[in-house]
Length: 128
Image (cartoon, rainbow, N blue to C red):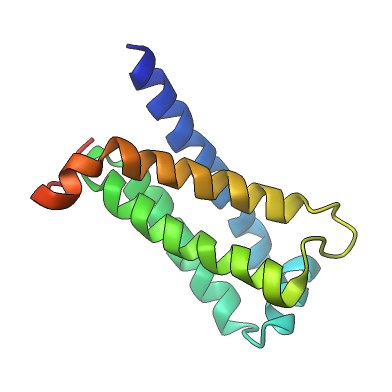
């Protein structure tokens, strides 16, 4: 029973954090435009990553596709972490490193979901 609550909380953390950032990506908020301009991906990268994050959120919520969502989420958030470390810096526009910390939280939550579903990796079963 405790494991089910931890699993649900982990999924909700990922989904809430990803969906929260969609508002900024899809509305062209100055912070998002700045980030993707620095990466040379504005506007198509911003919108494309937003769509990918929306799909990841949907996949994570649906039990049969949680593993797919976690793997996609891990890959996507690794891109964000590497962008912070090698191009943008940990702190962006005086945010105190908040975006970087949120990326790390999503990274570890996705790792946890993959770990919980590791037996399904070899069986190609995508259920939770």
